[in-house]
Length: 136
Image 1 (tube, rainbow, N blue to C red):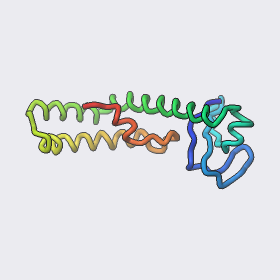
Image 2 (tube, one colour):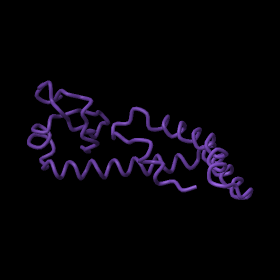
Image 3 (cartoon, rainbow, N blue to C red):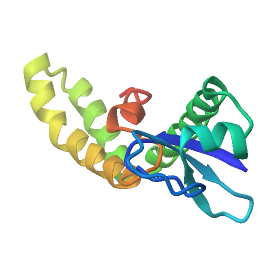
Image 4 (cartoon, rainbow, N blue to C red):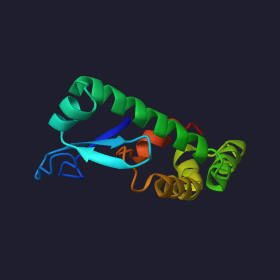
């Protein structure tokens, strides 16, 4: 069993059936099934961990996910185009405003490509989680 994330998008417990929960713990079982448990069921019946330990495990899973997306992002053609455009702007010695206008379309295309990679992820990863790791 692996803790994936604490989510607020699912508000019912797959263990006891309680509904209206503020948050649940997403857990992946060894067979690949993902279940959502309320914090009480997660801590006492299934994981036998404290909320602090669960949060730490969630942070680790999120970081692994962000690193995986970061590695995938660096292989995208949009990334290569953004890098190429940035180097061209430097070669032309463009000033800040002109340079920004010059590279913005390729950066926006790259951002859209990353967004499509992270859509619907269970870890609540946002675009900035990935792009903050990338330096042009």
